[in-house]
Length: 262
Length: 333
Picture 1 (cartoon, each protein chain N blue to C red):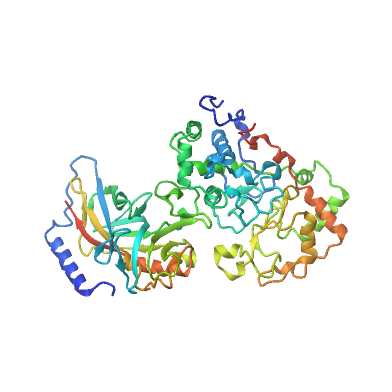
Picture 2 (spheres, rainbow over the protein chains, first blue to last red):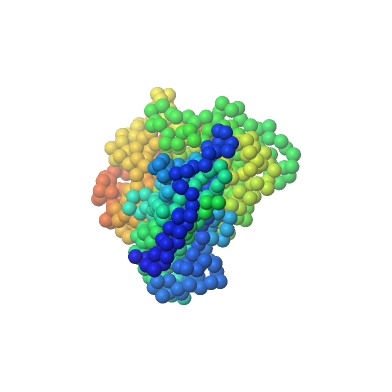
């Protein structure tokens, strides 16, 4: 278990207390405008290191290996967002590619428009960019190679990037440069995840734009199942075993902190 | 016509071509192209924009190097007499610049096949520190701030907002139009010319000894193979991309079309002449774990047979292609 048990109990209790005071999830408000059957759903991502909000550059942290480090860059793609309603019907966001960058607060908040009204009980998304878009030529928007998340020597997207420094890093200037990419076969660092709503729901209606708040924990990226020792692993520049170690870690760096329905 | 106003820096683009000249030719007997423009509709304006980008030094960090600096039309868009090419600040790369033609029949690019789509191919030379050393974002910025380019993007794609995607699609239109299919060999295959006795003998020898890998009509089987250059690999080639031991020291089998126009040869340009290449296959093959088995021990060819093969290889030169005015430098024509 990566999560501290006490915390999870408190968290579940907190989630339950939210769900106990909200409306019946099956009661979807009738649309106010005739013919309109879709609304908005907001996603908010808060980057964390353990219990602290991530502060770039200036703040130093200690990883599970007891290495000190700071973070200068933390970027990641999420794609192919799917939302499931209480009746198990699924909404799939079209053209679902989002690049989140710790140094661009605007990128950490976005709205999914045209979401059918309903009570949503779970979310699923991919960490990274699906293999199809890695082999389909020039892309734009979040997938523009100008965003610096694209390898040109062996073309494909860098799915997630963590950069910083650590005195323990054996790199000549103590850098940490971890660029995780690889979209095919055994080298794939794509991970499809479904962070639990913990019994909460997101109720999209004509009057409510629910907001799902995620925590994205750098500490998780550096530990469990694979505790990262910066003196051993500090630089990742190609697909392969090292990138997969980190991918297995970041597969559970997302958690739903809470959901607003107001 | 392209407007001539506000054009002090760049010479005007040459006269536009009849639009019916801009279409992809699929020569008879060739396989269907891998990239057929179905996701990037080929237009005259898109092609003209792509051509200007190909020849424009703006694509490099200090505005000195264009794609054409290392891909010259008279050398079938390779870099003649350059073992390796010099990029920005006179820095040298590590591999020989290949000729550019029949690219729509390729599924991946570069000697190591690291690039999986023609549209993203330019990302490599654009950003390589020893080639053009630019950022994609800054190229887009430079183009966006150039009124001529804004106009050309508008004509090609209906928007004055430059994006890297549109830039790469335009470049793919130019690069994809580079089809070489009018060599003397091609005319011979169409029954429109004859080969000399030496050339004809060379063709027979080629079919026996070379065409398993350099397979017509593209004169490559598109595989990554080790042709016995080294015992130990200074450059792991395809192995760098895949990390797989069987790929170490292998490189893309190059097309031999226009081979006599595009010396030097091999991934590192180590051989300056076709005779050196033939000598390598006859008596220079070096053994290693990944050597292609068909080359073990070399290929047995007499001096005359080697000469005949070279005579045949020269029939693969496509002078129509290297003189095609559609592909000329628009800055100097």
